[in-house]
Length: 111
Image (cartoon, rainbow, N blue to C red; front, side):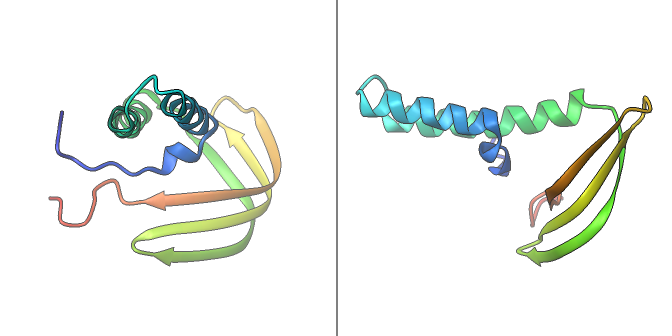
């Protein structure tokens, strides 16, 4: 396994929270060791980031009203209200409010 560090952002997704809940259940019932759960989460971070980078090729245009933004430790967070998504194939979706978290694709110190 690579020594590259991956962001833990996708652990807050529905798939990530389901994985964490399942691992917590397995640990609490003594079915796995906590160290295995940590390794599993680290592998999840790697796989989800790699698959999104390699497999997702579609684009969309996002329009809305920027409500708040901030940058902390080189991580940008945007809250956008009254959002309109226009996909490449012409499909349009709307949302009342979204949160966008944007990080560098490389961590500080990487070349």
